[in-house]
Image 1 (tube, rainbow, N blue to C red):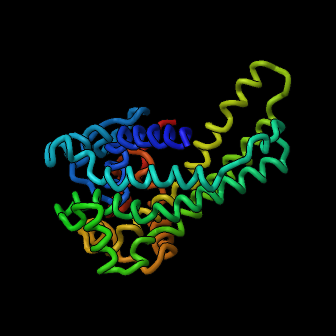
Image 2: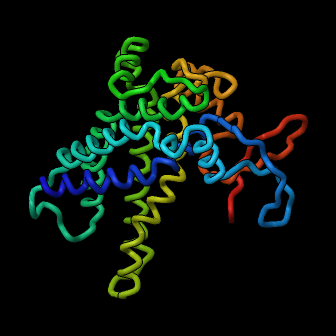
Length: 291
């Protein structure tokens, strides 16, 4: 019980600290560009039109809504974090001595399966709070107040969309979480087993970091699921950010996926360093990455 409480407190602290970053990222994901691009140079010296980064977006939000504006959607996100942590720990309860020290393939598969069930249960139960969080943030675009409180937001969604409205974007989110988990754990197992030699102190230390490294790559590979899930959570919900010109009305998450793929926007918002480059008579927004 004490362990779960400490995890909730730690998770709540990290949620508060990361709220401004997530806020800006969500606005970029839905295509909101309040500030014009400026002409600059990339690391290779080439002139490009650069869109504002994290701090410029944050300053714009502060200018409009004050410092408190950076924390829109924090309450439902804190609820989601706390409830998710409790559900995850309850589902993943492991009797003392049940875990073996060796990392055999059988053990990795078993533990990953258990983790998948726990994460999926937590995601399923907390997804309504996730939907409300995203909609509270996207309200900034049209200056709406439709989702002004967590309880009133529940009532609004139920009245306008029914039960299914609470689970908009759930399927791609679940698929992304599951794929990311399996990629992370299996890659870490392969690296620790075949790429790093046992018995060497430096290698032993490197093994402790392999999970974090593979987790980063797995999250990058499964980012399109996060993008599609977030777009579907706000799509056609009555907010300006979920309608044209920011987003068309998608018939399903697969329709959203295919349209983003055709437009080359599957990594939109994955980096806050963006550029605008000419492509014929129109402009295409591309990620500006540091390599």
